[in-house]
Amino acid sequence: MTSFTSRRNVLRTAANGFGAVAAEWLLQREATAAIAPKAKSVIFLFMVGAPSSMDLFDPKPALKKYEGQPLPASFGKVGGQFTDGSNPLLASPWEFKRYGKSGLPVSGLMPHLAECVDDICFVKSFYTESVVHAPAMYQVHTGRILMGYPSMGSWVTYGLGSATDNLPAYVVMPQPEGTPEGGTPCWNSAFLPAVNQGTLLRPGPSPILHLRPPAGVSAERQRRTIDLIQQMNKLDTAPEDNEMSARIASYELAFKMQSAAPEAVDLTKEPAHIRKMYGLDEKRTQDFGTRCLLARRMVERGVRFVQIYSGGGPVSMQWDAHSHLKANHEKMCGLTDQPVAALLKDLKQRGLLDTTLVIWGSEFGRLPTSESGNGRDHNMHGYTMWFAGGGVKGGQSLGETDEFGLRAVGDRYHMRDFHATILHLLGLDQHKLWYLHNGRHEKLTDFGGTPIAKVYS
Image (cartoon, rainbow, N blue to C red):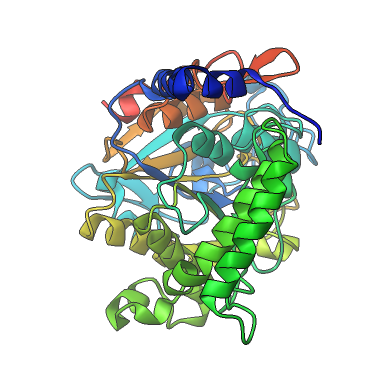
């Protein structure tokens, strides 16, 4: 049998293992000692295909005033993926009103979410570096426009570990019609340990398959079988073999999930008024409402990071309104507005919003000019995402775009700043949360971002 020796093994065998215990404690303390965090978990609501900020949260009266005219020459000729910048300006089809004590504007597309503005911090000046869906998704999810880097959920679970032994630390719930263009790299662990990758929950009444033990096999017998398999695997596995270590851990988790997961995903346990609040009794809101309610049940049971996608598969089930903006956004908002508002209200009434960071966002925004006469092309230069809970100061709007909503102006925020803010709210120091890969200390924020302090102070 091959003998494997590593620095960690040397420490474990020296001085009764006290060296290893001390070293691991110091490393963990160094990685997580940024602040005393309020946020313990994250729910990331990702709108696939890119909603139009100027039609949801960022009203631009100038669009109505100059509708049908070209963008002023002083703005330059700015196109998207499919337009060259010569298209005329397009006004929003929806009216905006101000809501809550904060008086923040929300369009008529989101009447339910409008009731929650005092708990939300809108940041209206994010920008990305690609006008193409997949690369822009990778930048939002992983910090880079290329595949091959760990997702945000993987970094969070790597830094904080799991708060539950019976459920995955990182859960992903895609649209039933399909995954986003970016696919699995959006929730993959890349070069981080494989145990930190996202676990997919299936749409429909059985989110997790094969939870029941084989017929005629008792729990005691199954426990003995798994213990034997684990012992054999560990004998032949090097400590640095992350893939095999993740496989070993997955066997143990799968066994524990047979008792814990059925209860966690059983929405019949929820009272009727909660199911109604999330829209489970309406065909239009049933799917997204189910996933939002599952997300609440997951964080309630210690799941660290939950990622929910609105949109995926065919363009007809995405926010990608290159044409017929009005029909598209009325459909997508109709599917999600009530469930998202219900999630915020439900977390708040249970005392979970204080410790759960909720993020709503997408890969980029949309242009103020028209495409196909009634749609909008992609816009990477300025768009809105928002935060709630988990130490966030609600009822405020940060950053801005120009008078037409084309570019972020003043305080502009890159994805490195987006990720640095999230890590800070979770108590993780972006510069100390690193992983040695190919001789480089890789980090979610690469060479570093600036936490947006006004989000939480």
